Amino acid sequence: MTSDNRRALVVRGGWAGHEPVKITDLFLPFLREHGFDVQTSDTLDVYTDAALLAATDLVVQCWTMGEITKEQSAGLSAAVHAGTGLAGWHGGIVDSFRGDVNYTLLTGGQFLMHPDGFSDHTVSVVGERAGHPVIAGLSDFQVHTEKYWMATDPYIDTLATVEFEPDEERPVPVTVPAVWTRSVGAGRVFVSAIGHKPDDFDVPEVRTLTERGLLWASR
Image (cartoon, rainbow, N blue to C red; front, side, top):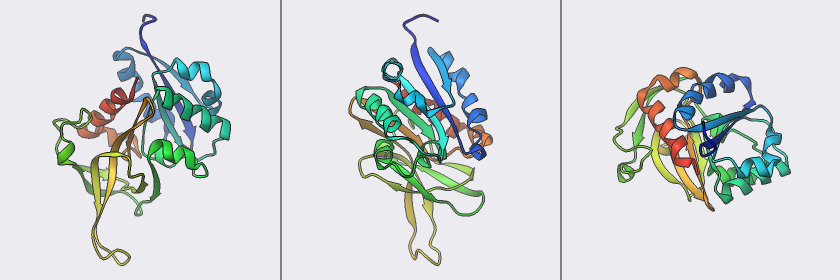
């Protein structure tokens, strides 16, 4: 490794059910193979270290639920606005810090609910965005996992969606963003709603778009 390598900070913790260490460990070799010096943190206090974040090209967050202080939230937001990338999947990025609106504005979305258990469902690639580097060459694919109902910011670039069929509460089908990117100041943000369990990433398309998303978001 040389001093010219990019730096990735993997921040992992929160609710244990999303296996933050086990799942993020799946991507550490990939990051290192792509020239990142990787540091992990099990505390959100790292977001108050302005010098560290300024030297970080990519923050990978896997921290479900929990609370973030104003200082931690402001530090992360300032770093992304200045050019540090932010990326994550599932509850580790969109079921985090529900009491902090500024965090939701940073990521562009918030998990609201999912039907009980896991379901077989289709993740549909948005045809108009087929040239985006995160999904280029990918087609619609099947997963067996949780299907997230999301509240999202209009200012996101939706790359893939899931559909909720009509039921007793909704008389019409509803299409919900499942994978998106966005720009925040000089920084980039990548979000995927897929990734409740390690074997979700055994689906080739899920693994591919997640790896591409990490690289896309990096400075």
